[in-house]
Image 1 (cartoon, rainbow, N blue to C red):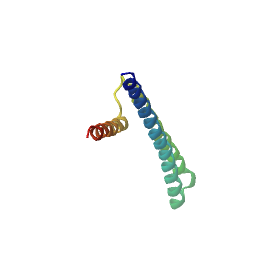
Image 2 (cartoon, rainbow, N blue to C red):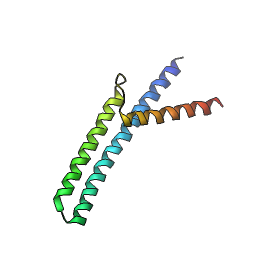
Image 3 (cartoon, rainbow, N blue to C red):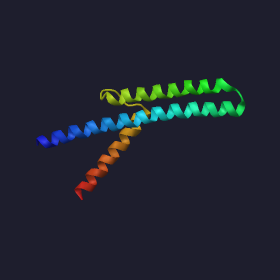
Image 4 (cartoon, one colour):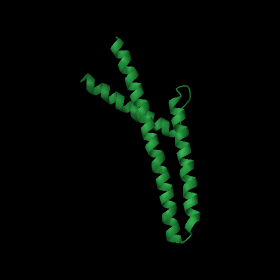
Length: 104
């Protein structure tokens, strides 16, 4: 019985680490995307610093929102936001598939 509790705890820890890693990667990706888009549009439209600065601002806003989602996901008493709900559904689906495959 003690092993079941330990494996549940390890599974929850792994889930939190996976969630944090996924959101961390998406924060970096959103920053790179928006800043890169601003640079490309600046060069194409010859508006040099303006659109890059807008891209930095949009990237920071997107990163801040994703970090907010991480906080919501880590607090079990609060409801997850849209990203957290999507990730929770994926985790639950994988867990159901794992249990189904283990039972067969």
